[in-house]
Every structure is written in C-alpha cells, then in structure tokens.
Length: 230
Ligand code: SF4
Image (cartoon, rainbow, N blue to C red; front, side, top):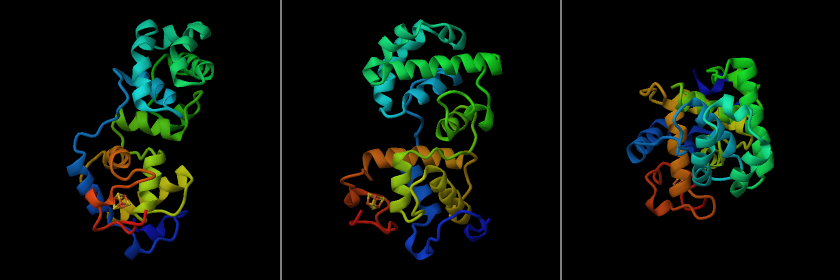
C-alpha cells in the first residue's frame, strides 16, 4: 500500500525521510539478536512484566519479578494475593501499591474472562486492567509471533529523527511507521514490525539517545535527515 493512500498519516517528503528498507536492514545487522529485555517464562509473566515496566526500566523490573513470580506463579495465585504483600515486593519500582493493585486486577481479569489464559486478541487484551495498546503489542508480538510495532519513547524519538513522522502520539507514530514500512520496507521477515521495534529500542538506548545521540558512530548516519543536528 502506498503511504499516500493510508488515512491519518502525516505529510513526510520522501527526500527528507530515511529509506525504511535501508534502516531495517542495517538495524537487523547491528541488533540481530534483539528480543524483549523483560525476563519471562510464559505469556502471563511477559504480560505482567510489561505492565510493571510503565514509568520504570526493564532492568528494575527484572530485579523484582523473580521473587514476584516465585511467590505467585500464575494468575490463580496472583489473583488471590494480599495487596500489601505484593506492594512490598514492587516498592523498589515506585508506586508499589498502584502497581500491585494493577497486576492483581489483571490476574483477576484473566481468570474471570479468559480462564486464566492470556488471550491472543488485541481488543480482549486492551480490556484488561493496566493493559494498553503498546503492552498488547509487546505480548502479541514477542510471545504470539505477530508483526506489531510497540511504540515507546525510543521508537517515537527515532521515528521522528529519521523523518518517518512528525507526530508524538504513539498511535499516530505507529500509523506513520507502518505506512513507511509499507512504502519502503522489504517485508522479508514475518515479524518485521515487531523486530524493527525491538531493534529501534536498542538503537535508541545505545546510540540515538535522547540528549546526546552518537551520530558519529551511527550506522544510519548517511541516510538520517537529523544527523549531527538531532
Ligand atoms: S544519525 Fe544521529 S540522529 Fe540519526 S539515527 Fe543516528 S544517532 Fe540518531
């Protein structure tokens, strides 16, 4: 599908935007083993860890989830947990009580509506407490193998610097990047958008950082419209 035929996309002059197929190929070479950095053993743990990662880092979440999942392994156990006990474990993340209420409610929702199973369904996931579009995309992409872009702060920033979007709302960024991939992308990988998102996150953390992008060592420097001026 041509970019110009998709509704809701912002006007990007192709000459100012980095070619998506080149970007995807170079990020694939650089971050070939990219995967979610949240430790998990099943879809439930990935869902809970992703919900917990809001407003904190994956590293911090990985520091608390081993104890969390060893005490309450699975939605049945977590749904019946004492909120104060869960709060104590989540306190290092900040907003421990809020996070505890959220994941207990999430476990209860899974039991009540899905027999304790994580549904591979966007609408059903977004109906669960604490689960938004990005979280649902992370789980459906990383666990169920769909091609879905999860837009976080790194994906949004990199997309704007590459000239793929001028917008900041995550849903709008997603639309523009998907349109750009439809326009330029190779489509060689069945999980193309999921992997692109994971690689963009790594690139945003390690190279195209918010305050001091390392353009001098960036593999995208020759195609990036913001090289040296980001
Ligand atoms: S060249 Fe600079 S601004 Fe462009 S993607 Fe690389 S680090 Fe980011």
